[in-house]
Image (tube, rainbow over all chains, first blue to last red; front, side):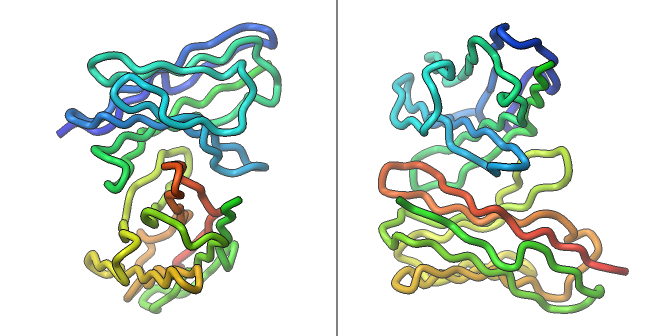
Length: 112
Length: 111
């Protein structure tokens, strides 16, 4: 069974640009969550989608947005990139809320 | 606001030693608690999940316990091996389905 797949693995952007990250969950998983990991702040919850609906959102500005498609694949978009957005962005999927979350290897985003 | 704390921040032990990693959380209203390991430059690997109604879970050399009333969980690793070297993260799923992470314990198992 394939795991969670995130693309691309690495991305370099400049300030002011926008970026879209993609996540394909484990087959059958309907919940997809996104996290930002930085050395200073650790792992922080961005948002969760379940059956194409955003079920929860963390404390991030509106520049961070996401969506989920009918096949459960999810995308995360960050607009007007800032230097502080440099981070490892991790996606996780699960069957239901009380089931384990399984993570992809992440997308490392660097802002120049 | 739920806060998760992991102690110690770093740990170095000789191969073969048994060890305990600690995790504490401030709000006992949780759905579950999950332990992960993270290798450098990689994502997180799920190790054990304990539902809020459970007291412990075991997988191989790993045993995780949960005391919800005191807001504590421990991860016990038996007979540690160099391959166990990684960062171990504890996370609680709160009542709004958010997964709240601790800052992790960096474990080094010396050959």
